[in-house]
Image (cartoon, rainbow, N blue to C red):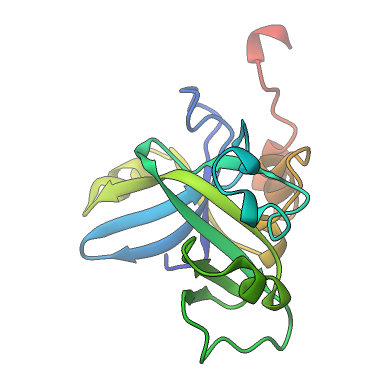
Amino acid sequence: MGPGSLLVSGTHLTEPVFRRSVIYVIENNDGGTLGMVLNRPSETPLVDGLPEWSAVCSPAKVFHLGGPVKLDGALCLGVLRRGAGIDDVDGITRVDGRVVLIDVAAEPLDVAPLVEGARIFVGYSGWTFGQLDGELLRDDWMVFTSRPGDIIAPPQVDLWGRVLRRQPQPWAMLATHPIDVERN
C-alpha cells in the first residue's frame, strides 16, 4: 500500500470518526501511515478561517475533518488539471498521479489555475509503524486504488458506497450495507 491508496472502513467499524469512512493515504513508510478522511465535511465554512481558499475549494466550501489527530492544523489536497506542471511552483507537492498536497500558506490565486479542485482538512488520520497492519489483519480496512475524483467528490456523494460499487465482488455488494443494521 502506498500513497494514493484508499482505506475504506469495514462495516463493523462503528466509532463516529471512522464509520463508513474513506481515507486517502498520503504517506506510508517505516515511520507509519498518514492519511485524510475524505468524506467528513464539517459545518465550518472556509470563510471562517481561510476565506481566500473558498474559490479553489468549490463546491465544498467547508473544512473537512481529516481525522482525529492534530485538530489544530490544516492540510490541503488538490487534483491537478490534466497537463498542469508544478515543477516550478512553490507550495505544491505531488502525492500520486494528479493528486497534490498544497501548502495553505501558498497564494490561492497562483494555485487555482493549476487544479480542478481542492479540499482543506482539519486534522489527519495517522498510524504508527505496524499499527495499521494489525487493523488490516482484523479486516477493519479494505485497501483499494483511488481516483482523482475521490478527492474532490461533492459532500452529498456517498463516497464509501461509490468506492465499493466500483470494486469486484464481494466488495461491491458491501455498498448496499445499511448504515444502521438495527433499523434494517
